[in-house]
Length: 153
Picture 1 (cartoon, rainbow, N blue to C red):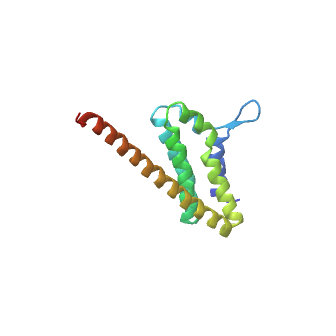
Picture 2: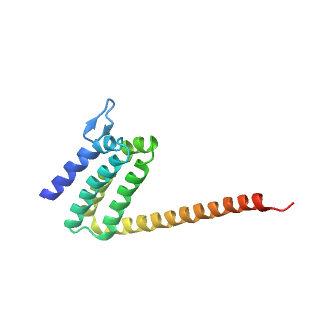
Picture 3: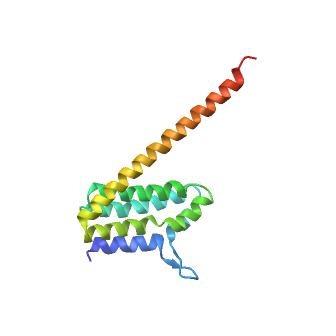
């Protein structure tokens, strides 16, 4: 195992699984960082980006790096939601997902590349669909309000 790989594993472990709770469930520092309003999720995201940067330095293809960024952004974005995000931070474990993805890529690069490419495309399609639906819903609500306010009797 290379020095970078060991570092990535240790950082991921620290952020996602360094504390074992009764019953065997593991949590890490990332969840606790998330409890600090505003700054906590930024710190967690910054430390997660170190793992992605190290993967980039190891020559991991962009498709895999994009999947790693998506995992981190999901963690950081949902983690920023009060209460629900704090619970999510302890469960999602984006860093462990990214280390597992890196390990899978090292073992089967072609298969993981194709699988990740498809997952990235699916994520983008779902994200665009959600945005279009949200905009459509907002326009519909505004049109209802407009009609209610300016409808002549």
